Length: 553
Image 1: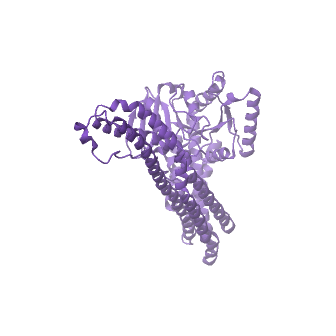
Image 2: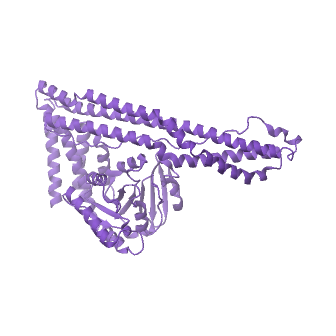
Image 3: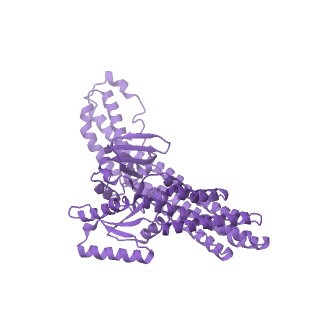
């Protein structure tokens, strides 16, 4: 029997049980398993902290500089790369549109600089390359960096985890392996047994130092995992070709040679996790069903009688948001004011070189100056806005982290109470709060002049007024730099406030949803439903045992 046919009943069971009891928390994992069932590829996802060398590694492995790289966080959109008979790149938008673009222009959609916070609403980039023929059957996935100041990148990558087939976690030799890296590896093992560490930038160390770092990483991994993930040192620099060969041998000579087996083991892991987590929720409901009404209500209050604590958590998050919102305008204005003198200098210098081209008539001077200044201001202020973006979003990122910690602490407390009351922990891990970060505001200049002075052009020669017009234009440049910096401050303030209160609303929603979910599961555990719960739990356990037995065989 084909592997898919053998696994399909277990997957169908998980989907049936999750739907019957409304376990929406498992929707991402369920969707990933269902998608994997119909795929004839294995996704090789490269994940890790920003600037760990993920895009550089893939460019080096492919033998072509396809993905943008830089000294600041670059990747903003997930990019899939596979073999194709000819070069092809497609941009897939959130709204379903699909656009083919030249391969050398994908940076305009992937790059954080050219597509800040994914303002172009790109869902995915897919690339096909003839050079990947040796890796036919594998689909490489480049993901945005984790833990940068750009939290939307972290959310994008974490949201991709359930889709992982084979995971390469890129860890730079400096610093090697943080607790967040270990947490990421643990999360990945829920979705695939195929996890490895890519120890990048190995050229920064001597052979002895590299051996010491690799040994340290392996020791840390051995302390945290029953089966230690493999560690692959890597460098894109000449002289380190042996590292590339080792990775290629593992991918081409290992994964592809055992393609069907590897693909099946990945799918089994996803389904096994789905069945186990379904079982946790059903066990909680069954424990409730087995109690008399008075006991159930008492224990229910012990578990979900945390509403006062939830209200306290909501209030704490609201205060954090209010504090951040109150300081936004001053922070943004102060950052933008540091650019005012430099902007004036740059524009005045450019103005001096442009002005002589406009002296044909007063009308020419006025229209040319207005068009030039509008364009120049939009360009320079947009550059400043992009440059300062990470500083502007720092309070938002801090609020997100504080809200995340508050939510996780509440989840942990709820799980502990469920364990003490019903003997069942709730294996619920808080995910990063997904909010739409403010897009970089559009710079609007408007008309430079409010009167039609060009009407005087036919009767007024240029030479007697040229110097006066020049002085007026120079004063106008200084004034409009100040005016538009102030306008930009307002735009950023409004955008950040929307995002901050979006965090507060999302945190409040999650707290309410978690309490409602647990309350519904406890309430659904009535005596009348107990037989159905026992039957479904037995089916889940039996399916899990069958998966384990087939894996051992």
